[in-house]
Image (cartoon, rainbow, N blue to C red; front, side, top):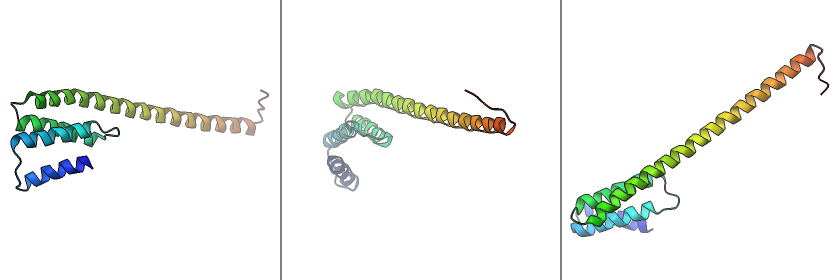
Length: 124
């Protein structure tokens, strides 16, 4: 709800109800913090958070809090992207392993069937 409220404030500002630059930077910074701290943040949320931090720094460049937050979250953004990439690669590799196991099991079953058909008996 808080994220929606801040987005609405920015939308109203874009529609002609101007906020002071200090207030707009504060709203963008707060929205960036809310998005960045979501426990289930998606890549789109992270990108939106980064855009809001950068925008806050652009709107109010004299306030170092905004530029420091933008720089800090840029680093966090990279870490999150790397983690997502790692987990996606892990999932892809596990899928490949599972597919290989299924293929191997099918080939083994086919080989055993061929052996039985030719009269070979496995006495294991």
